[in-house]
Length: 66
Image (cartoon, one colour):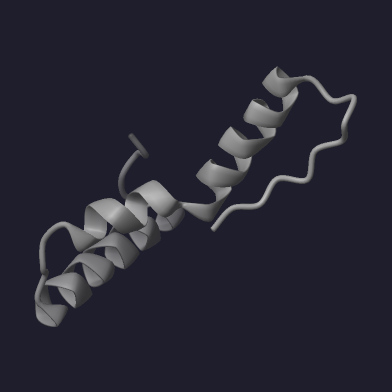
């Protein structure tokens, strides 16, 4: 649960803006989308390995980042 400390004199727009920033940093939406369907652990690991290989190729200079 996200808790936003707001002062009495604070504008509601500023409080909403703080909430949105905190929501993005917590990555709640990504968690919810990930839980919508079950992915097998082997497929999840395969994706992590492919990401790592891609990042490594970018660091070496083999491919250009998108």
